[in-house]
Length: 68
Image (cartoon, rainbow, N blue to C red; front, top):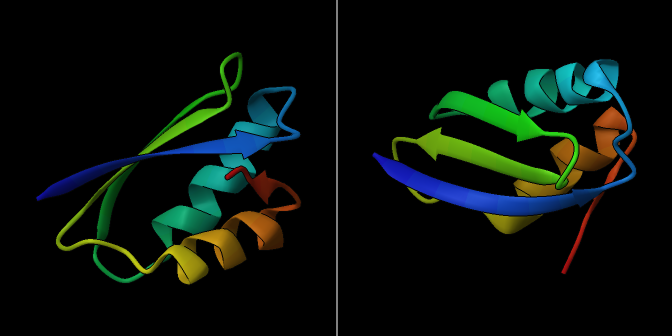
């Protein structure tokens, strides 16, 4: 298992967290997504390292932006 942390901008509430969780959770190999709205940090546990472009696309589809 691989644990990767990402910084996501624009989240302000639990609903935001739910949208990001749903989008990232739908990526192949993802087993767990944890979102901390206050810090903007998203932790993703997956079977293998995820393609950053796929993660960015999922975050954008949720309506937010992957920082850095």
